[in-house]
Amino acid sequence: MQRWVRQTCWYRRRAAVIVQVAVSSTLMLGMGALAVDVGMLYTAKSEIQVSADSAALAAASQLAGGQGDVQSAAVAAADQYASMNTVLGLTPRVYAEDVEFGQAIPDASYQKFQFQASAQSWDAVRVTVRHMSSSQPSDKPLLTMPLAFAKVFGVAEQQLQARASAVLVPRDIAVVIDLSGSMSDDSELQHYKRFLGDTGVWRNGIQINLRDVWCALDGPAPNHPYVPGAEGQTQYAGDTGPTIGAMNTWGSAVVPETYNPSNDTGLWYVPKSSTCTAAAAKTSLQQRGYSADEITTLCSSAKDSTTNPPQYVNRTAVILGLASWKSGRTGGKSGGNGDALVQNNEITWASYPSWCQGWTWTDYVNYCASTSTTMYSINSAFRYRFGPKTFVNFLLENEPQNDQTSILWQTPEQPLRAVKDAVQAMVDEITALDSRDQMSLEIFGTTAKHEMNLSETLSAVSSRLFQMQVAHYDGNTNMGAGLQTALTELGSTRARAAAAKVIMLMSDGKPNIDASGHFTSGGSTAIDNWVKSLAQQAADRNMRLYTISVGADADQDLMGSLATIGRGEHFHAEGTPAEYADQLDQIFRTLGGRRPVQLIQ
Image (cartoon, rainbow, N blue to C red; front, top):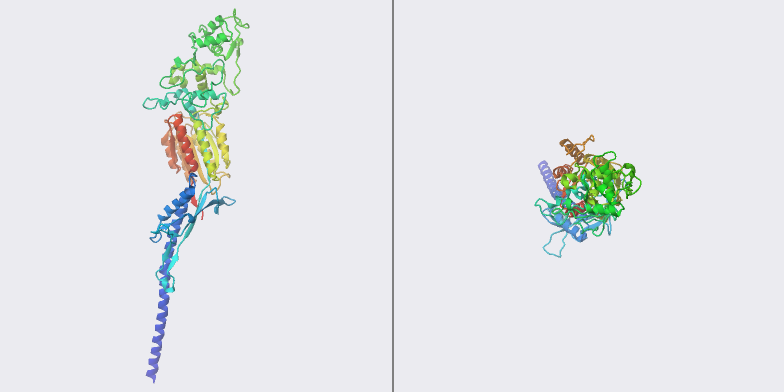
C-alpha cells in the first residue's frame, strides 16, 4: 500500500513537470521571439531614421538655390540619399507623396523651429521614408521587416517608416567690406597699364574707367549694375562730363598699348621753369578775354622762382581757368599793379563744386607738379600736365574721403563699384528666397565702423554701401578691426540663438594696422597673426567665415588661411574690371544661396 502511494506521487510529480516544461517552453520561445524580433526592429528603426534624416537634409538643401523645379529636385535628392542608407539590407525609396514642403516657424525666442506645411515660400521639408525599391517601375511596395519568431503569435511582418523634418537655417550675416584706399586702384592712372596682362597683350579692350568717373561727377550715377568697358562702350559713351575751370576736353582714350600723356590733347602741359606752349591753353586764354601780352606773361616761366606770391601756382591756376587775373597791364584787365607777377590780391579764385570739401585749386596744381605721386611713378610724363584725367586722379589718390570729395560715392570707383553691385545681387538673391536672414554692414579703413545693425531689411545694407566711397572715413587697411565689429554684432542681442552666424569678408587681403592701431607699411606677420586669431575666435563661437579677395595682387594666401581657420571658404576674383565684376556677382550670389540645413524634428 505504501509503495503504491509513493509510485502514484512520483507519477503525479512527473506529470506536473511535463506541464511546467511545456508552458515554460512556450514562454521561452515567446521570449526568444521577442528578443530576436525586437532587436531586429530596434536596428531597423535606427537605420530607417538615419535614412529619413539624410533624405530630409538632402531635400532641404535643394531649396537654397530657388531656381528651376525645386520640388522635383528636392524629391530626387531625398530619394537618392534615402537609398544610400539601407534598412536591414533593403533599399528605401522616396516618392513625391513622401515629401511635404513648408516653412520652419520659430518660437518667440528663436530657440527652435516647428514644421508647418505651406503652399509657397518653402524653407523646410518633411520626408517620410516608408517605401522600398521594386523591380516594377510602377510598384511602390511598403518597407516591411519579416519577423522570425513572432509568427508563433500570428505576426509575420512589421511595417517600417520614419519621418524627419529639415530646415534651411536662417542666417545672421555680418558683411565686412574693405573701404581702404586701394579699392579705387582700378580707376586710377597708376594702373592704366595693368590690363595688358602677363603676355603684354591688351585684354578685351578694357582699361581703367577714369573717364566714367569723370563723367559721373556731374551725373548721372552709374546704372545698377554698372557695366565696365572700353571708353566709348559704357553708359557714359555720349557723356562729356563736367567743366572744371577751362578743363572740359577729355582727349585721348587711355588705351594701355598706345597711350602717351605727352600726346594727349586733353592735357595741357604747363611746366614750371619752362614756357607753356600748349596751343589749346593759349586759345582758351584768348577766348576768356586776356590780351596777347597777358597771355605771354602767363605762359612765361621767368618769375617761377618767386614764392611770394607763388608765381607758378597762380599763373597755372589762371591758365586752367581756376582763377581769373586782373593784371593792370597795358591793354589788359584793370585792377593790378601791372608788373609781370600774378599777385595774390590780383586773382579771384573760381568757385568750388558743391562736392569739394577739404581741398583747394592750389592742391591740385601742386599735385600735378609733384614727383611723389603714384601717378608720376607710373609715368613721369604726367608731371605738369593738367586736365580731366589728372584732376580725377587727384581726387581718387589724394582726396578720396567723404569729407574731402563727397561726390565720389556715386561714381564707378573700381573695384568698389563691382563689390557694391555684387552685394546688391546677393541681397536680391536672399530676398527672393524669403529666408528670414538678417544682415549687418561693417566697414573698415584705418578704423572700422559698424554701419548697419542686423536686420531683416536687407536692402538697407546695400543702400548704405552704395552711399559710401573708397576711404570713406580713412584710407588704410584695418582688417582686424573690421572682423572685431562683426564678432561684436553677431554676439549682440540682435543676433538670434537659432540662426547660423556667418561673416562675409571682402578685401584685397593686405592689412596694415595692428591691434594697437599702429600702421605698418606693407603689413607684418604680427598683423596677419592678429587677424588669424580673430578668425579663430569666429570658429570657436560656431561662426562661419567666408573670404572674398579681389585683384591679381591680393594676398590670396592670407585670405585663404582666414577662411580655413573660420571653417568657411575663400573666393577670388581678378582680371579686367568687366571680368572681376562678373566673378564677384557670381560669388556673392553663390554666398547668398549657401544656407546651412539642420534637422528640426
